[in-house]
Image (tube, rainbow, N blue to C red; front, side):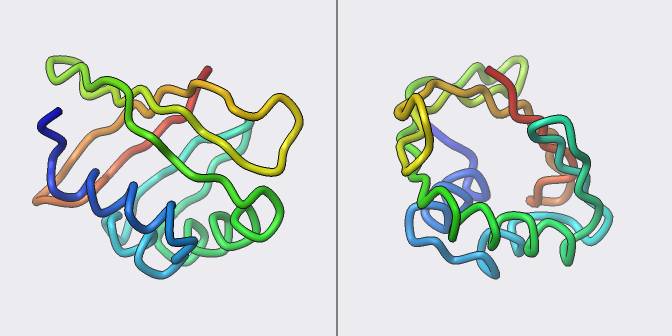
Length: 105
């Protein structure tokens, strides 16, 4: 699977529970939509993923990339009910960084 560099970096940061590296994959004004909540900008994104990392210890295994629609399908495993689950990461890139990310089932 030929993942964009920043998506490979996102997966690596997630699997290493590195909240700062995760946030650095995003533009300053990025938006993340997850579990009914919106997280705006790098600082909010870093705070959100830091809390999620501590609570769920979730790791990502990429399964498929729909390049025409920019959707990464991944298996997420962690300390949450129903683990593992398959999630879809709908993303938009801008200048090599993630501008928009929506996580769905």
